[in-house]
Length: 156
Image 1 (cartoon, rainbow, N blue to C red):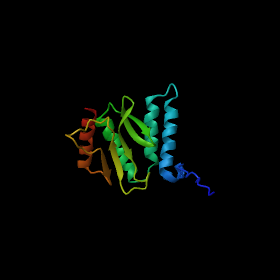
Image 2: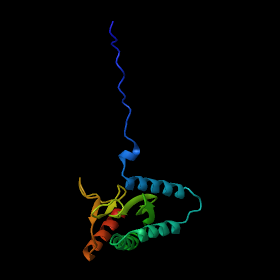
Image 3: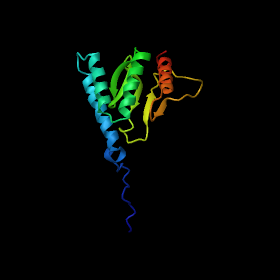
Image 4: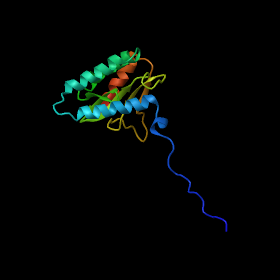
C-alpha cells in the first residue's frame, strides 16, 4: 500500500525583521523606543525636549541642518503652541502630545530630498484631497512663507 500522507508545507514566514527593514529604518525604530522610554521618566521638562531637538538638528549634515534650523525657527514663530520633541530621531512638533509636523533629513534615509511632513493632527484639510508632506532641497523666502502659512493652518 502506498503512503498517501504528504509532509505539511511550512507556512511560517521565513524573512526576518532584519530582512524587512533597512538599517536606517531599524535605527529609527530604536530611536523611537529610546524616546518612549525617556518620555516615561517622571519630572521631564519641556526644555529637555527642545534641547534634544536642537541636538538632533546639530547632528545633521548641511544642507539639511540649515533647513532644519530654519524650520525650527519658523515653527516657534508661526505656531508657538507646538512643542518641540524628537520622533523616530527626527525633529517634530506636537500639540497635546500628538505630533503635528516633522522634519526628516534627506541624509537619514539616504533620500535625494528632505521632507517636511504633517500628521493627521494637522488641520490642512482642503476638500477631499490635500498634501501632507513636502520635498525640500533648499528653502527660499517664498518657501518659508508657505511653511509658516501651513503651520498656522495646521494648528488653526
